[in-house]
Length: 550
Image (cartoon, rainbow, N blue to C red; front, side):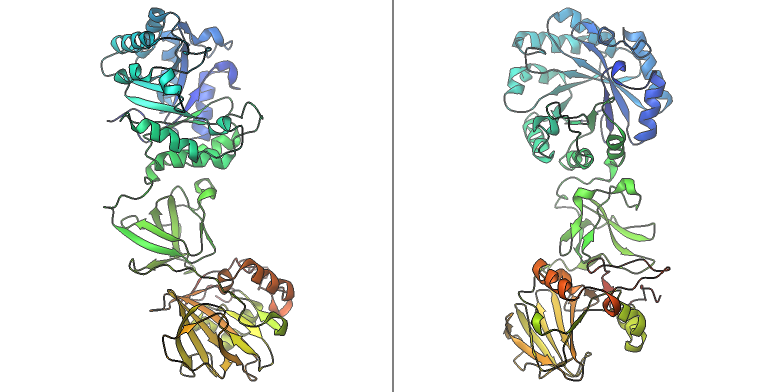
């Protein structure tokens, strides 16, 4: 059923005395300026049979009755914001409470009333099912026809039963479970477990769910909710099917909280698990780390740090979502938007995968050369060697002006090991990287061992183990070139071999052969990109030059 909260984010306002602003207009302006994606504010109007003014000493913002609520609705409407109301249910004076709540509901411009019904002696706890029935039916009868009533409660454990939730359900149109994950865990856990629990509990009642999320410090430790938690709780709620979300509350939200909330775009978050009927495009991440964003944009506010994708991850994107914006091709997937490629530099971040092929990931089990025999080592990508000598070796025509592999240096004669479990595909001098090269297939990757002498001679399809000697260092070439191509059929993408090695292998290589001097990554006053071993682009074989020689 449609609700006033559909695809909307809104703030909860407790009391004028709890915020730094001095007027309604100032508070509205703060919300508009620092969270422009927010649709409105839910204002606490009353507590039991009392108007909120009893608990608020800021007269310019207090609510003593319907006329004060009207001031809020007008101020919010002038800035394009919705007015929702929020009431804490007590049950001490049922008719008095019904009268206050229904008077608030009848104020023009009000979109909904959220009834906060909590367990415990300080709230509604200790009241009876009859009291719950009388309150809910009385408020429903006194509100305007078709007016939206919402139930705000703690969905954990016995709390729903203790507030007699079955007496409230017939008279409300949406459920707003409190998901105060930082409070509930005393500052120790993230939001996903609590959101999952709230959505699971609420599902049984078949009403729209609008989680109320936390933006206030944990009372027991005094620690602020991590900014990433505030952002991810909103994103995750929508992914799990939330109709809308709110954040509790204004007055405790500062720069970090506003910044996190401002990054959420409900219209660009697909539900968790793209429906099976949705046509998909499947990609493989071919860069060490790929950002996920709330929309197809490189603006910092769109970044979702907790959702970053890693090399080798399979991404199912919505086939109709392809978007060209800000120099990138973007696709929408389960957790947000990611760039497939850079249209200016031709750098590729995700490779299109035939859905029938497995996206096999692998790691080297040993180095192709014994480390203690190696004399030098060239890194992949933007190296000094590629800048100085790449043209002489056709790097611009082959590997976009960069070094397309790792070079293991030795005067000659020592064995070269496969280092991986794979299938033998080729050896000989009929392909690039003479005098000989050996090709081994690992899943959907082709591993090339170039410039070797005495290459292995076995039947195509023969299994290869990490200890298989596939050749020897040639005394003329004095090194072995290790290259990895993705997709053994068209081999259009060249990947950084370091990303297929264990941390220990890399640490050992880096310790013995740090990228310095002639073996360093190229930088200048004009070029400050790709300066570390893993911060290197995926190379498109035969693509346009993208490095410092471009």
